[in-house]
Image (cartoon, rainbow, N blue to C red; front, side, top):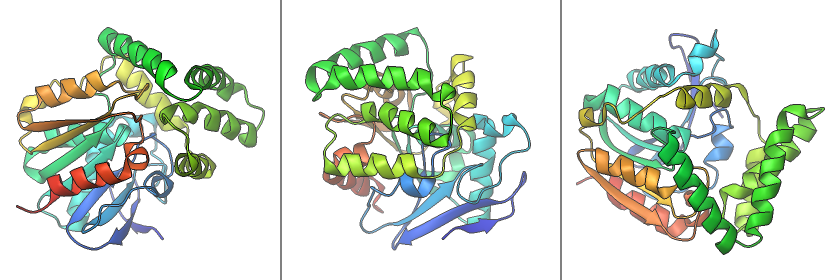
Length: 286
């Protein structure tokens, strides 16, 4: 069940589960259903607040596409903090959510206690593209039916916009998402099935890629970040190669880098126990 509150630009929403210190969880996509996105994640001893960015959950869509820019996501997260009455936040973000955690920590350094970001690029330049190609080659060698899944994902990505209806588009999307995990076992398949069947807003992803390919660089203000950070990468993430995450950790003043072997983008699902242990230890009160 979603809790809503008024914010500039329209209502925003969130869900809470668990008990303990509050961790604000920022989903990827962007535009995927936040509840489904974090359905496979557990952080024992913490209360998880699943934030619904604009156009997801029961959060209002923005009046214009500019409401999907990173600066707008940062403003909405600050609205959430004010609504909660929290002086400083513990943040966790995966993919686009990781980008948001980094951007917010730079924009509001005094409002972040600690943050964890997983597989979220700070920029997409030529070096990023080259590293992604190298990781894809390793994925094809290591992952079960890796090359087959990469080829199918590429074809599905091209077919998405030509799909005749929502059912066809979701089928292509599910094929595309199979490259986000290395071994598609029962847990991974069930997670992807749930994620791809949940409500979907495709518009924010277009804005994200336009902004990234247009030169957005979240490391420009890395020296403003004062909160300790845990930067996590999946060794075989073909969408955000580990070298991109290592560069973020190296640029931040106080960061720990963790690369989880043999997994891809959704480390919370593929390496659940190792992920949960590392994150809970990092976020635990001193």
